[in-house]
Image: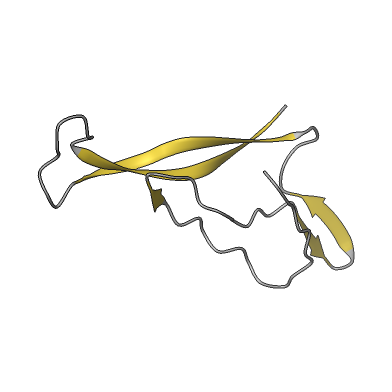
Length: 82
């Protein structure tokens, strides 16, 4: 991770879009909600830990060359707490 931007917004975050062969370069994470002047956490206490995970695989359009994967892996960020 190279940077973080905290934003207060009244729109819900967009779902992550999986990307082929690499992790998405950015994504939104909902940390809390403010309702009637009260703040509520959407995640527990602790350090936020991000891990890259393969979400699904698709077939390649072209046959794989020797040494290449025969499928296309699609990745997203998985959020956890430490």
